[in-house]
Length: 481
Image (cartoon, rainbow, N blue to C red; front, side, top):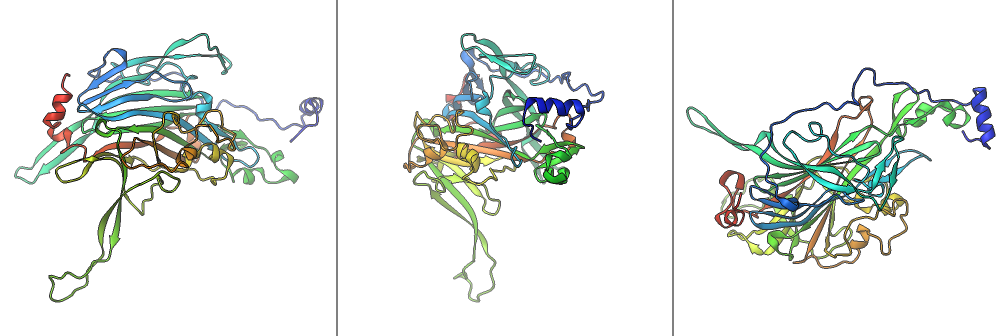
């Protein structure tokens, strides 16, 4: 309902003609505002000065928290060979439903990390974790707002690192002997955790380094939902407000709705496979083919179709050429390889980008203004040639300006160059998302849920390093722990 003036609004309020949203305390006796601590065994720390980290075969540097972006890991190497120049969280977007009240967020435009607080020991990170200091220029206020002062940097601790013994093995096998023999190795992981709070949502970002050379990046979404109120006055001519609101939202309480919305976390992976900057994007596809009659069979017999592998190197960047959305009906592998360095079997050394969870993309049409401003939301993977001026996949200044492209940080603009991707310095832009269909159990706080992807060694090593150790040449290069 719209009022012609402030006086009319006040008169409606005083006469009782204005419908009010009655606020009730729905938390009961749940002490959710008090952190519940969980202690964990202290891990073995491998931390150097100046943010350098050494753990097993891994070496990398933790970058200080940066405004309008998330955590970044630099100069990542395994066994003495560089894998990545940079792995960083670039943005986290949310797109909400609604008719004339739909709202959209690029959380990079909301600083992504500067409005956060130091991690809470025993809640965010286990006992024995090491914390990295960063600087913020925002001061949180009691009212929930923040005041920015570019002349005053305040230290805080948004990132921690710890060792974690996971609840499963990294490899396991039972030998068919009498008696049976079971062998395996518990999965030990180094975790770099950073948490950013943007208004009602918390983004828990973990980067996990494993003994077999795998890197897993995940983001879990926590906090409370952004809800809205509805009444019968919200529709014209006395319409059914609940039926109308249910087109966009889950109805959680009488008068309280939770709009459906998506979360998409976007990362930058600047690859340098084996320390070289001449890499190629190779796509491997799994398909089926009709089996031809075997020339060795004198009497032809029916044969079933069989699975086949096909490989292709992507020659140039472009929308549809170097952009991909995972399709369960067309499985395969996306790998960044060094074609000049092959294994004895002739396979190029590389790393693969694999989705670790069911991941959605943007369901809005490509011409939607928000999608034009956040083009990364259309893809799971996009690969471009590296340029220093193409430093991030979107600009925090164009959240609602889908028409601005010239000079802005825009992934589709990067792709439009059509540059060669053969033996070039490549950047993989990775986005993983989930649609959040709200449920009553999301009150008062959501149960954390999230998305993940992995960077897996793909013929980079001659064997499973977690089972047989690093090759001598690599273990010598990575010695020193």
